[in-house]
Image 1 (cartoon, rainbow, N blue to C red):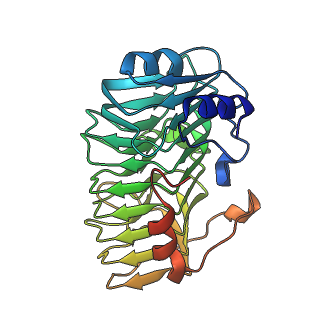
Image 2: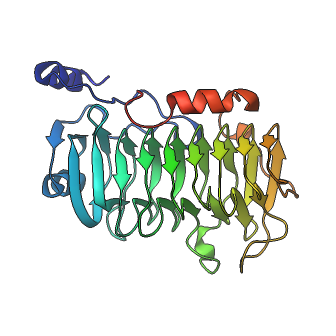
Length: 306
C-alpha cells in the first residue's frame, strides 16, 4: 500500500482498495503511486483531480452522480473506498487527442446507468489497469478500448446484465489500430450480459483467460478484422455461441482465434482457426484450471474484495 495512503486511511477510519501490482499486458503500470492522495465525493472534484496535469491517487467515496465523460489523464489511480463507491450517470474517458491517459489504474468502483460509455480507453492510452470493478447496464459500451490504445489489463471485474460489454478496436475501417490493442482479460465474470466479451478488431495478441461466462445472450468472444485472439481456461455456461472468428461476425471480416483448455457447459462450439502470437512471449502468467473458474471468480471478482 502507498505509505501516504496508509496514513490517510488510518486517520479517516476508511477501508480502501490500494494497488498491489498490475499483471498481463499492463505490467509496470503504477498509476498515482507516491503522489498526493485526495478523497472525492462529487463529479466536480473527481473531474478536477482526474484531469489535472500532475499525478494523484483519487479515493472515490460513496455515490457520485455525473453526466457525460469525465477526462482522466496520465498518472492517476482512481480507487473506490470500501464496497459502495459508485459512478452513476456518466463515465471515465482515459485520454484526449492532446492529453494522454497513460499509466492509469481504476479499481473497486461500481459503474451504473452511464449516458455514454462507462469507461473508454482511447487516443493512444497505454499501461492501464482496470481491476475489481462492477458494471451495470448503460447507454453504450461498458468498457471500450480503441484508437491505438494498448498495454491494458482488465481483471476481476463483474459485468452484470450489460449489453455492449467490451469493444476492442474502434471500427472496421480504423486500420490505425493495427499494431496496438494488446490487452489481457482475466478472471472477469460475465453474468447475464449480452455481447462483446470482447469484440476484437485488429489487435494481436489479445489474451482472454480464466473468465466465467454465464447465461450470455448473443455471443462470448468475437475475433474479427484479422485480430489474433487466444481464448484459454475459460468457463462457458449456457452460452449458445462462445466464439466467432474465421467466419467473421456481422459486417466484420474474419479474425484468428486459438482456443484451448476451456470448459463448455450447455454451450455451443467456440469457432477457432488460424495461428496467433503467444501471450507467453510477452509476459508470464498462471493459468487456473477451467473447472475452478466459477468458484474462483464468483468469490473474488467485483468491488469490496481487495
